Length: 97
Image: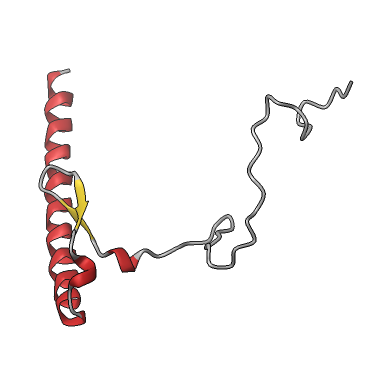
Protein backbone atom coordinates (compact mmCIF):
# COMPACT_ATOMS: atom_id res chain seq x y z
CA UNK A 1 0.00 0.00 0.00
CA UNK A 2 1.33 3.43 -0.95
CA UNK A 3 1.63 5.85 1.97
CA UNK A 4 1.97 8.90 -0.29
CA UNK A 5 -1.27 10.89 0.21
CA UNK A 6 -0.78 12.85 -3.05
CA UNK A 7 -0.56 9.76 -5.20
CA UNK A 8 -2.36 9.93 -8.55
CA UNK A 9 -4.21 6.76 -7.55
CA UNK A 10 -5.58 8.25 -4.34
CA UNK A 11 -9.36 8.70 -4.82
CA UNK A 12 -9.44 11.49 -2.21
CA UNK A 13 -7.36 13.78 -4.43
CA UNK A 14 -9.40 15.11 -7.37
CA UNK A 15 -7.62 14.89 -10.70
CA UNK A 16 -7.92 17.18 -13.70
CA UNK A 17 -8.99 15.54 -16.94
CA UNK A 18 -6.36 14.93 -19.60
CA UNK A 19 -5.90 17.69 -22.19
CA UNK A 20 -8.02 17.22 -25.28
CA UNK A 21 -5.16 18.30 -27.50
CA UNK A 22 -7.55 20.66 -29.30
CA UNK A 23 -5.52 23.71 -30.42
CA UNK A 24 -8.68 25.85 -30.70
CA UNK A 25 -9.23 25.71 -26.92
CA UNK A 26 -7.35 28.59 -25.26
CA UNK A 27 -5.06 27.74 -22.38
CA UNK A 28 -3.67 29.95 -19.65
CA UNK A 29 -0.56 29.61 -17.62
CA UNK A 30 -0.30 31.05 -14.13
CA UNK A 31 0.02 34.82 -14.35
CA UNK A 32 -1.18 35.12 -17.96
CA UNK A 33 -4.21 37.20 -18.92
CA UNK A 34 -7.00 36.60 -21.38
CA UNK A 35 -9.11 39.33 -22.96
CA UNK A 36 -12.82 38.96 -23.60
CA UNK A 37 -13.26 42.09 -25.71
CA UNK A 38 -15.35 40.15 -28.21
CA UNK A 39 -18.06 39.88 -25.52
CA UNK A 40 -18.33 43.65 -25.15
CA UNK A 41 -17.96 45.88 -22.11
CA UNK A 42 -19.21 45.02 -18.66
CA UNK A 43 -21.77 47.59 -17.54
CA UNK A 44 -21.80 48.65 -13.90
CA UNK A 45 -25.37 49.38 -12.86
CA UNK A 46 -26.10 52.12 -10.32
CA UNK A 47 -26.67 49.47 -7.62
CA UNK A 48 -23.25 47.92 -8.28
CA UNK A 49 -24.51 44.86 -10.15
CA UNK A 50 -23.08 44.15 -13.59
CA UNK A 51 -24.35 43.06 -16.96
CA UNK A 52 -23.37 42.90 -20.61
CA UNK A 53 -24.96 44.23 -23.80
CA UNK A 54 -27.12 41.47 -25.21
CA UNK A 55 -26.80 42.45 -28.87
CA UNK A 56 -23.08 43.31 -28.86
CA UNK A 57 -22.33 40.94 -31.71
CA UNK A 58 -24.82 42.73 -34.00
CA UNK A 59 -23.39 46.25 -33.51
CA UNK A 60 -21.24 47.86 -36.19
CA UNK A 61 -17.61 48.70 -35.41
CA UNK A 62 -18.52 52.39 -35.09
CA UNK A 63 -21.37 51.57 -32.69
CA UNK A 64 -19.03 49.40 -30.64
CA UNK A 65 -16.43 52.17 -30.48
CA UNK A 66 -18.99 54.75 -29.30
CA UNK A 67 -20.49 52.26 -26.83
CA UNK A 68 -17.08 51.41 -25.30
CA UNK A 69 -16.35 55.12 -24.83
CA UNK A 70 -19.74 55.95 -23.27
CA UNK A 71 -19.85 52.91 -21.01
CA UNK A 72 -16.27 53.43 -19.85
CA UNK A 73 -17.09 57.00 -18.80
CA UNK A 74 -20.40 56.03 -17.15
CA UNK A 75 -18.83 53.04 -15.38
CA UNK A 76 -16.17 55.27 -13.86
CA UNK A 77 -18.82 57.75 -12.66
CA UNK A 78 -20.89 54.94 -11.15
CA UNK A 79 -17.84 53.33 -9.58
CA UNK A 80 -16.89 56.61 -7.92
CA UNK A 81 -20.48 57.14 -6.69
CA UNK A 82 -20.53 53.62 -5.22
CA UNK A 83 -17.18 54.19 -3.50
CA UNK A 84 -18.45 57.47 -2.02
CA UNK A 85 -21.63 55.76 -0.81
CA UNK A 86 -19.59 53.00 0.78
CA UNK A 87 -17.31 55.53 2.47
CA UNK A 88 -20.28 57.46 3.89
CA UNK A 89 -21.84 54.26 5.20
CA UNK A 90 -18.56 53.29 6.84
CA UNK A 91 -18.21 56.73 8.41
CA UNK A 92 -21.78 56.51 9.75
CA UNK A 93 -21.06 53.11 11.30
CA UNK A 94 -17.78 54.33 12.79
CA UNK A 95 -19.60 57.40 14.21
CA UNK A 96 -22.06 55.16 16.05
CA UNK A 97 -19.33 53.34 17.93
